Amino acid sequence: MASRVKVVIPPGSGASVNGPYPESLADVQGQLYFATNLFDGSATLWRSDGTEAGTLQVKSFPPASVGAPRMTSLVPVGNKVFFQFDDPGTGQELWISNGTSAGTHLVKDVTPGPTGTRFAFTAAQNGRLIFIREWAFAPGNPQVEVWRSDGTSAGTVQVANFGTVGRLVAPTMLGNTLLFFLDTPGTGTSLWRSDGTPAGTVHLGDFGSLSTDGYTSLTVGNALLFFVVTPGHGTELWRTDGTPAGTAWVKKLDAQAVPITQTGSAGSLGLFLLRDGPNTEV
Image (cartoon, rainbow, N blue to C red; front, top):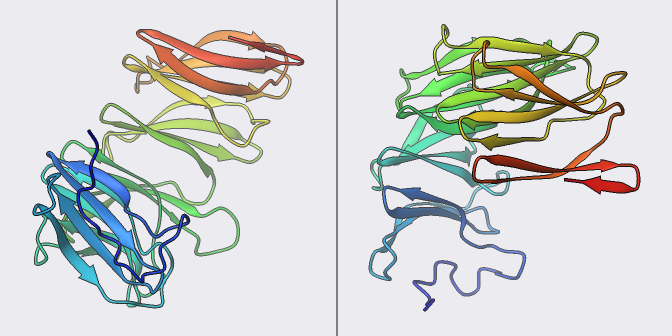
């Protein structure tokens, strides 16, 4: 039977159906961590063992004139949790917590100064955090960079810099491998992988210019299935296991560029809905 654990949004905080509410829930070795962001700019990191007595504030931050929500994107790595936090002195940057107030602190001011960092993707990878930074220091595409962090400033380092030539599309994890596409106007789209090291960040394949803004994909077993929609070539199904040899064309689905509206899986099968004119096909 469901029951209330604890009131974590205090009365008089302006709570409504639109918030504030507990958010960015993350399981850290059986402890639930979450954030509360109030309308006055204050924020609190919490942890809970599922009991009222065991639901505790880890660290609270006083009101500040910053972006909302102030604390976001909790990612568990081992017995710690990484999160993004907006502070007036640094902007939105990477923080870490071990579940104590003293152990909750800024990891690194990746973009020095109050501007803050655009974290396009964050995930756990082999006991560390891997993330993609987009740095819009000039007009045009932002610079795309892959980073990793062990939770220390010295251990938060850039793995690869792709410059501004491509637009980041659909980053995802396949097991412990980061996969992402770079869409380059006039050249086409390339698929990349990273294991969090420079040597392990490699190119997997090239595709033509897309007629859609992004990719639809699904994981089936140890492979990522994805759809490539190319003007003049129609809609194709591809697969990758995160290696160049394991990245291959599977089947041409339609001679036209048609949308994939929904995906799912059943055991070892990948299922998707393809809309072809008035018909929707599975």
